[in-house]
Image (cartoon, rainbow, N blue to C red; front, side):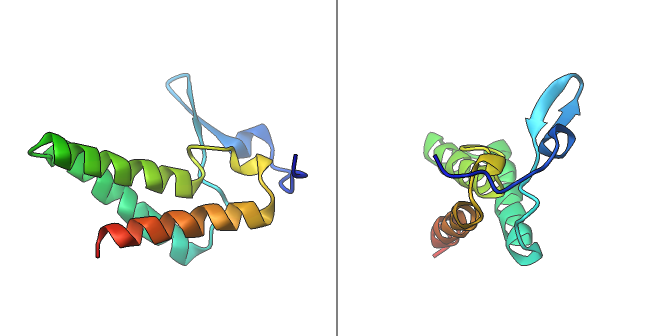
Amino acid sequence: MAQRTDSSSEDERWLVVDGRRWRRTDPAIPADALARLKSHLGRGRSGVRTAGSEAELAATRHRTRLAKVGLGERGTPWWEQTDSQRRERWESALGELDALDD
């Protein structure tokens, strides 16, 4: 197993809302990549609400999932990944998300 490179506290890893724990966004994501991932997430969430068919719903849920993985909010916890694994996670997610718009 890769050595953990993050020394964040539990409070830095989790957000608690109404007693439910939500994983926080990876703080190592550069601002430009973070903005792009959040844009894709917003479009995915909006699309889920407005989808007119099962195919559109599946596509927007896929976009939402990719964005959340890229942000570190899904998949392997970011604090269990090396710096290079974290970078690969968000860069790979952005590559797939951007390809959805081509």
